[in-house]
Length: 342
Image (cartoon, rainbow, N blue to C red; front, side):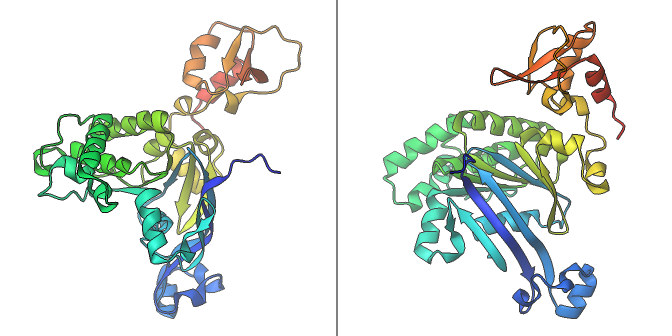
């Protein structure tokens, strides 16, 4: 029996093709034609090409890419806003393409919530009623749903704003309402489709911190779409780089920064401060057992925090994970990691 954690969300060979008789070109050589040639020949456009991945319970999985890469189309197939042309989307092992309308509504109401770039608030409803809207659809008692909505508003930093209306709130506050609305149903899975791209940089950073803080408390399964690498590196347990409808590379933030698989990924990560992303785990090496150690460091310690430890220390440090030594890091390795060159 496998010890691997069961996936909460699984995509298996998922395609999305727009156009007449789209299913006929799935898996054919035509899909590799330039977009203009494919459109002229078949009348079709390929948005997502044979994508497969798993997201485990409590993981933040970030999909990033440039405009037109297919990332938003992909996330919208997870709750069947768009239906895949081919492939499977599994939620806790259940193929959502096989669900009847009633069961699909149930999954959407109770298992999955989505936060969009555009807030989509109901302008003539109070904030507390906007947040409670999903609970109202579920048929919850008004007293219960109001109490739940007010509690969730406190969790996103909007306690006391429940009786206000959307046009009385700033853009950042409105996006917090959108987040609260998604959380109110207590979903297992949260989908984010570039939710912060319309916000100014300071508010955007504040919202990212809010997501991280909520995730520490709630441990939701999150799939987050962005075109911003810094945002992906900050939020993601794993990152998928998407180009032309395909995943180019999937890995931890440090994997993607330290070991880009091709020039496309390398160009994305070229200006990333490596010392802010790489960890002791990424730069460690095996011990020959002969050294005297200066001490222990956690495998998750970032290079920037290692630098003051090794600055005047010639002895190596043991790299420890779950109480066990997994490698060694020394001043040479830390200084090498500070170099930005590929």
